[in-house]
Amino acid sequence: MLTEVKEEALKRLNYVDGHLAGIRRMVEEDKYCVDVLKQTYAVRRAIQKIEALILEGHLNTHVLEGVRDGREQEVLAELLELYNLSDR
Image (cartoon, rainbow, N blue to C red):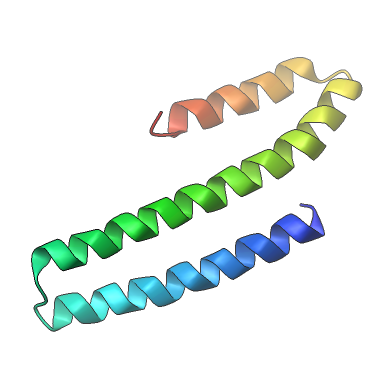
């Protein structure tokens, strides 16, 4: 993983960790459901941004290297697996 991608992903993961702790407190304190859901949606968007960041880094490094090395089918299989795992 590229250093800048790793650093940005870790920064965003720390944000998500803190946000999840806040949501947990909201549930424990019986906060209004809509307010809790708004926060869970924010965490989901943050995770999607992390996924996009990591995927972009992967496409620009490992995928290109795999194609250059003649491993097109392996690379394609990995990308299809990721696609099938995603929410689409």
